[in-house]
Amino acid sequence: MEYDVIIIGSGPGGYTGAIRCAQLGLKTAIIEKYPSLGGTCLNVGCIPSKALLDSSEHFYNAAHTFTEHGIKLSDLQVDLGQMIKRKQEVVDATTKGINFLMKKNKIDEIHGVGSFVDPHTVKIVKADGSEQVIKGKNIVIATGSKPMSFPSMPIDKKRVITSTEALTLQEVPKHLIVIGAGVIGAELGSVWARLGAKVSFVEFADSMIPTMDKTLGKELQKVVKKLGADFYFSHKVTKVENTGDEVVLSIDTPKGEQITLTGDYCLVSVGRRPYTDGLNLEAAGLKADNRGRVEVDDHLRTSVPHIYALGDVIRGAMLAHKAEEEGTFIAETIVGQKPHIHYRLIPGVVYTWPEVASVGYTEEEVKQEGIPYKVGSFPFKALGRARASMDVDGLVKVLAHKETDEILGVHMIGARAADMIAEAVTAMEFRASAEDVSRMSHAHPTYTEAFKEACLAATDNRAINM
Ligand code: FAD
Ligand code: NAI
Image 1: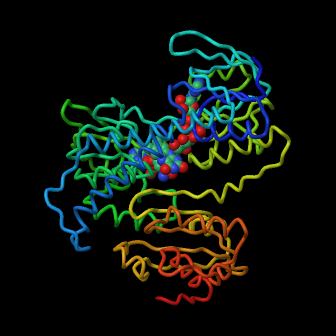
Image 2: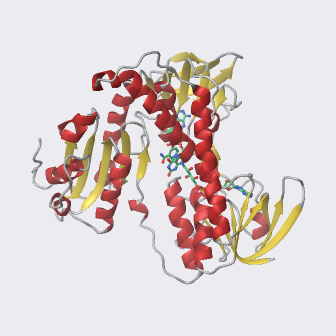
Image 3: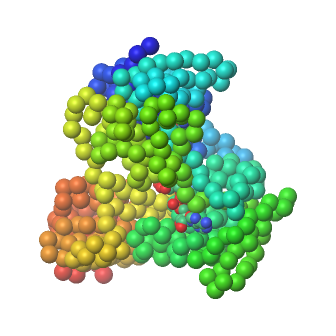
């Protein structure tokens, strides 16, 4: 069987690319080694984590903020079994939706491990051991990533766990130790802290979410601290040991002292690695770089021009929406269109509550690059909408060019920041100035007024409600 395009991997990058290829009239096959489609994001990433974040947030609010709203509840309990079951139902409904989309678009769905036989041929080994060989004029590597670990913190999936196991725990941990206070640590640490676990973060860097604008890490720490979390910044884990009922961590402090932390679970969330195991890249004339990534050019082509790669397995942010854009980009490139991705305008979001969202340059980056800039910021507590909902934590920070007023970066932490950041992305795609946004009407009372006010603050310090 010869296809116009074979896509290996059915995550957000793979399935989006497959649909766009089919829309453009290309005969397309998608290969997935697991029985369900959707990759990391739908099965063990974005979707299940958000389902548990939402459930745990409801519980936390019922326990901590409902009384203030004038709602009395008694005998509040966590039914963890039901919470995990609902999460799985959300996952199943979402992945079945992808099966439907494959059928609707007449994409051949083949389940099994795909590997290169030669640059145009892929062999699929199925769960029952049978094999199928298909040929493609174009092939897309969309094999994603897996959790990373270090020899000092061996994952046993029982007490020393990754995000995958942290989404299916059968009990609320008494003490969850999280190594790495990045995106996964912040989100899944929040889930279990809200459900009653003591959570301790051990982080190599000096703040939470250290790659985002520094203001966000500081603010996020304040809100996560309210959940009762402890932080060990600039600390280095030297050993993690599962002793049966417990896990014991040996840690070097910044002062060179040694401490131990004991918990019942340890979540290792120190990043993810690109995944090409079993793909037999060599048979296609390809090899992974020293960080395990498949190298691509600006058109997402590998060194073999009809083989493309996208998403977590290549350079750039490991985000579902980045992979999706790349899937579309490759399909349109194959048919000779000239698509474009503005990588700096891919937003990053952390789904804690309040949410963290960011796009464009951070303040650290503009400083480093010597770009003249000005800052406008506006706190959520000055918003009527935020007071009404009791979501007063957070702020919006806008960085604009000092001379042209063009918006360079927007960094926010606050209620519904994940949705609010889309306005900043749109504004920046159209190269709006801070004054442009500050002259647009924003509905009152909404959280989005914080973005307008931060833009006013960046334009001659003209915020109205502060
Ligand atoms: P993947 O989704 O990893 O899919 C790759 C697929 O390829 C997998 O299904 C795999 O089984 C398959 N595969 C691999 N090798 C083969 C082979 N040889 N043959 C056949 N199939 C193969 N990102 C966000 O933007 N927002 C979020 O809220 C978010 N939350 C996350 C939460 C968690 C806990 C985690 C772990 C990640 C989260 N991410 C989030 C990141 C997001 O999941 C990834 O960036 C995204 O899934 C990458 O998509 P992809 O298509 O590159 O690869
Ligand atoms: P991450 O890169 O966000 O965070 C890893 C953290 O671990 C960093 O703060 C780093 O300084 C720290 N670290 C690294 N080595 C360490 C060590 N030895 N000891 C202590 N700390 C150490 O990676 P994370 O959280 O594992 O997530 C992986 C990827 O998944 C991210 O790239 C992210 O983009 C994606 N993701 C996205 C989500 C979203 O968009 N909401 C949600 C979850 C994951």
